[in-house]
Length: 184
Image (cartoon, rainbow, N blue to C red; front, side):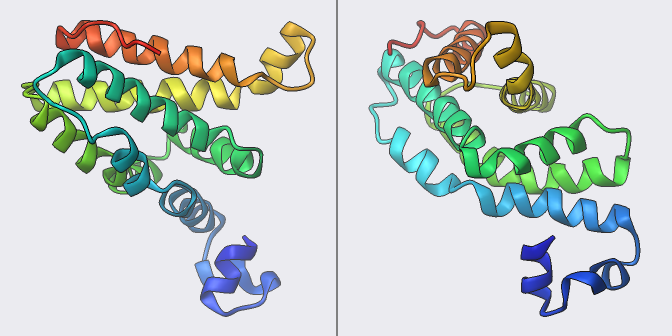
């Protein structure tokens, strides 16, 4: 909320008046978290300079993309935004979900370019499934971190846990695409 107040050049107590309703504020906060919290250009640039004819490199790049997304979502300073995005993703507010879909284009557009370069054919239904699968897996597990810590009797989840999650997610997509398993 402070970021939104700063961007809008208003005081924090006047935010609800400027946005009209709590839902509008929530929508703005969730979409800003997705837009501003992750460097999508760097995420894809760091992982996509590969030989697209080499299927193993494509698999490894897919893992790298998903792992980088997970690293971004589980950063300590970003976890409250991850929780907000997760709540928005799994809510029943269609207006908010439409707003999220528009913002998820920041990931979707370069992801589909990656798929096209790799020669992976897809339908609109395939595309929707893959993107929902990636985001829901990463957000769900990052958001469930306290539950996992209690279950494992830990103070903090070690990074290999998220790397394993990224590998499992990439593995499922590689099966779907007919690609070899990613090599870490």
